[in-house]
Length: 107
Image 1: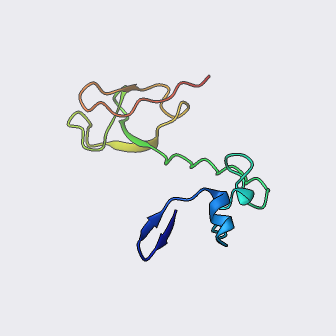
Image 2 (image 1 turned 135 degrees about the vertical axis):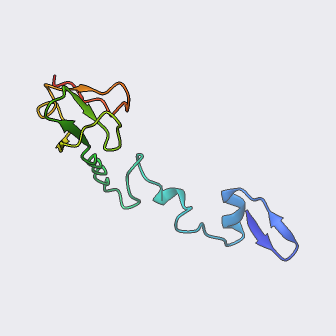
């Protein structure tokens, strides 16, 4: 499409070239990427790195067999903050009151 003083003209590529118009650099089909993710120069972009998940911490009581959220009413005064992963909480179960995040099983 070409904008002139009277309005907008819809032209085919051949009609536009016959009138002396050239495609915009980013709109030129000759510069189109060969495949999704490729740059106009032909070199493929490396895949974006996956974001690392943030560590999740839970709270445990030494005399309890459950792990909790920090604000759980069942969590006692003697509490310890631990990382929620398969190795550090394998002897604990999630609290049924505060419903903390569930640990992933180690496969």
